[in-house]
Length: 313
Image (cartoon, rainbow, N blue to C red; front, side):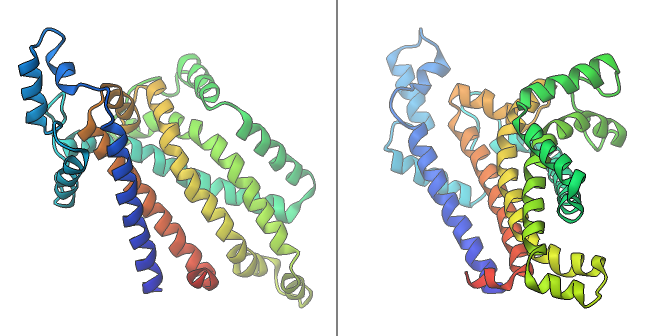
């Protein structure tokens, strides 16, 4: 198992290096004069050249990437070109907001998806049709439309939740919950709809296996068969989908944070990418990729524990 984890972690590090290099090259393509952007159109060519030299962007892309990578390995991601703010500080101030939403969506998606999927796969009939209809409708509805409806109904009309803003957990637990509830619901609807279908299909497929029929025919309680055998084999595909949906949440967080006025890394990504602030963009990339790699590593470990064949696949 240890070799399995080390191999997955090494693959994640390699992925991080490849993505960071490609992103750095794309951000360094000709066409953007950072010095001119910072100093303004009236700045002299000498001042612009001096500014570009100060930032180190007058050198080759490989040299720039080498300096950035050596700093990143030491934990130094540099400072913002436009605000002079430390990259770690800028991201650290906004990361808890996005993490609160993503962790909440993942928990809600996991619990509801497995509950609905198992319920539909075992009971079938009307329950199964309901889950299928919900799956299609929930997955097809545009995310921005769901978000706007939630804001209009529960924030504007009923006043149950604030329409915009964020309260840190350290300031007020109740205020924190009230500000992340609607964003979590908005992102969870599509995630639950898609994953519940996957769980349902996996449960039905496992329930049709001969060994499950044999266990049931021998008089074992259905609860025991379901939790000790069916879920163990049906969970692997669903966990894979859950890991992929976590990656998709990074994109969904941008929309939700913009609508709800949340100071997270989603809204931050839009703002600093528009400016072309490479240190901030690379820092956000590092955090995002590391998060994806860690989540996928946890998913791979869980699948490996549930299905030992996956360790040698």
